[in-house]
Length: 213
Image 1 (cartoon, rainbow, N blue to C red):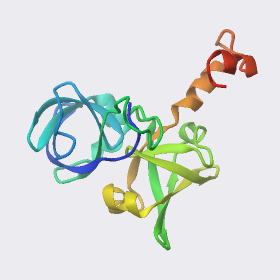
Image 2 (image 1 turned 45 degrees about the vertical axis):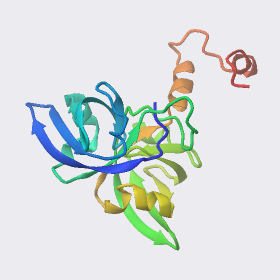
Image 3 (image 1 turned 135 degrees about the vertical axis):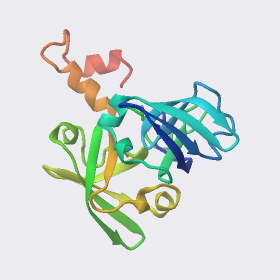
Image 4 (image 1 turned 120 degrees about the horizontal axis):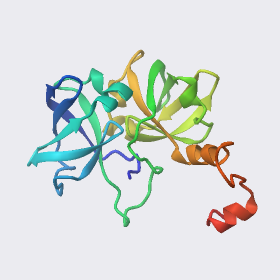
């Protein structure tokens, strides 16, 4: 589990391609300070397992499903990626709960500046947009962001200067793909309301019994 608060950006040192999979070596500094084989590192919003590491790099295997669902198919040697280590119970939760399980990708339709903020308008498929709500949370390439507004085919986010400085977003332009992870809470609520779910009624009693109130 992650928070979507990026710790540093790394660089893809090399990519070894398989038939449908790949193995990446990523140059980093902060996230490898206390890394162990088997640790999870959120890389551009994708939870991946460290298979090897050194003083300034770590290696990860990328499965075919990850390549199909994310913008990893566009990565190449020299690409910058957002990095975050897994959440520890003692950490402050500065963003929102991010699992690193990407729902799909969205395309940057437009980018513009407003004073110290940079705006991005992102188009996405209806299956993703159904979980995007105004003033809700969304993870874009692993970055926890607040949705400013939505419409039938897109949503917009406003990027503060700190996020501009420490993530890869400022390298993005119109037409680029971003990995999207929707807030997982909406998916659980939808599942509980499904006609195929037994005892699916959500009322005040249900919320109190499950410590939501």
